Image (cartoon, rainbow, N blue to C red; front, side):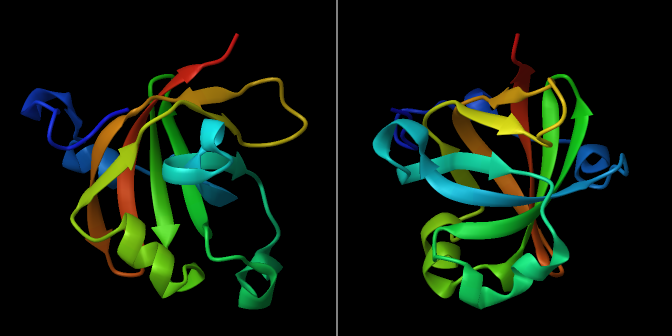
Amino acid sequence: MITRQTLRFNEIGQATKNEYTSTPPAIVADVLFGSPRNNCAGSGICQVIGPVASEILDQSRWNCKRSVALIRVLNEHKAAFHFVKSSMCSKVESAYFNDHFFVVDQEAEMRLNSWSDKSYRIIPGIYQYMTQGHFYTMVLNIKPMK
């Protein structure tokens, strides 16, 4: 398990300004927070479901461990996540977005659509995020699944 106390500075996932503001096509996805091996409890991203319809912004359909995110695959090793603040309950916001670092303690699968064979693994680490208007934005390290 990755903790902030044991992490050296050079292991923190940081992105360049260009990566935060890049403009490849984005997928609107439903992101479930937590750890995939702990039944979605704990830190990180448990599941990414994309694409999703626009009506998911209706809060009544959501439990408090979810958020809408615009996801852009920048290359085979990085993906920009733009989490929509208004799609989160305050409990998620305070648990996952309170100190400009986001912890992913276990790998998670990221399949951006159900009709493609292409999927990725989100790499564990501590990632720095930026607050940009209506979004929390971070660039996560990914790797293609074979």
